[in-house]
Length: 457
Ligand code: UDX
Image (cartoon, rainbow, N blue to C red):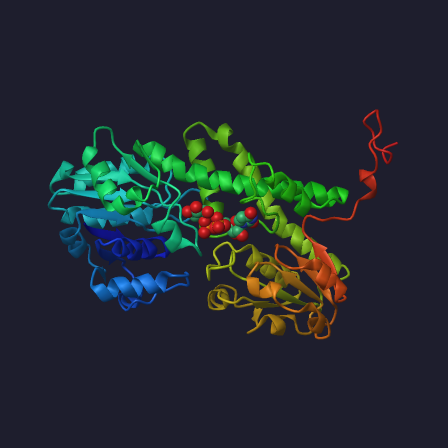
């Protein structure tokens, strides 16, 4: 099929390259000419494992091209995917200006029947509004139909998630068999490979995406709430999570305690979803998402607290090494990165902070020029009063803590993520403070039968 992908960020560039890899003729559209020029040469403008290979392949076969012209896109495509960003507005709601502008630019050029398919994450009701826009602006009116097929790809696994997704969602208006048939045709190879497909109405399709991200965020904040309790009582949330994961009804994925979630999706999507529910008069149903967000933000504050404590109660004149800048390993994306939020908070409180990340240094430098940057994990640790492990790149787990102990001012590790062998670090002379593993506090002494603790008594 001849398809276009409008918006060539993480989602769109990956989707365009993957669709070409499935054998379609693809035209990627973006207003950023620097981006389309790089993509047209087979160079992804961001780091994503496996993307360069399929991008080169698509461009090489001539099946994948890029443009900044909506007129060319309309002329070319039988099906148009909308993959532009829906960032967060200051009030927490989603900013839909890129979407409305894409439809506004494309629609006047649509002169023959085609299907426009939303992939971006949006507040429920957006598809219906965009359907109205299409009807109004497209010269042939109802000949262009609108469908919604949300994308569930994870950064760092984007190619694999697009070519082997857990499920496909096809949202279409009642009676719109043409859109559903076109999407089944685009995804034919995936459907034949057995990927489950859910065909539903537009609103349900939109909600499936925000519900999935909310569930994942809730699972992470659940285990991090347990971490807060473990810290208060001197228990170990790592072991608690392992034990919960053995229950097949619960499962271990997204149950990793630590510094919490960041990135361009989970934080903004839960805020946007809660705000949308309020607009719809269903705010109470999603009130818990505010708490999910609150628990997540408190992890960052707790890590700052642990660092201050590790440094003897003050950050003045202290040098702190930070391992990690990306919001998770496997990406150079620093949007709402928990690691950089902690680094910036420590800098704000007077510490000298030096950051190392295997992939995200360039992005971090641009956004946080007040931090220092090092070119290796060891260089970031050099002469520090505390070393913080904040993004779990595999490279950090391979560092030998013994020689490192001789290069720091004080061998203190504050660990916010899984992946380090802490027995080995302790054996090499490091003191280790770990999120979710606290010292028991006196007020948590044995509860007495009348409900009062010994301390109360
Ligand atoms: C997420 C969704 O997974 C994906 O389906 C959706 O399409 C986009 O949003 P992504 O933002 O790439 O994908 O990151 P993800 O792998 O989900 O991780 C999100 C954050 O949660 C990261 O900061 C990660 O470090 C954190 N996380 C994840 C935890 O803190 N604990 C976990 O157990 C899992």
